[in-house]
Image (cartoon, rainbow, N blue to C red):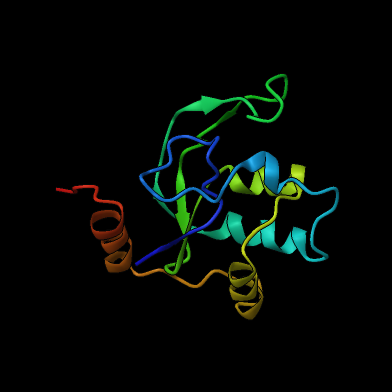
Length: 131
């Protein structure tokens, strides 16, 4: 089973995954010392689903409108939304300790994810049919 990270209740779509609580409760004044490296890791994920939807910052409606906010990325073990990197960099949101440990053990480099694993995540974990 894929492990979701950063699927906060205010963010949609949630893909039927359990929310990580409220985004506004995860905001911190400063991030982890290796926050930039973690953001880089999130940006390296294998694209698994592309969304063309656009939306504002849910914590600052006057903030920038960003596209592709519901797009999904993975490293084969964890699954995250495209906008997680934005919220991490902007609001230093708290992420699960086991996710951060996983990223650090990988030395901030996402492994290659085989196509078979991507299909398994789409069909089995997310319930999306593919032809």
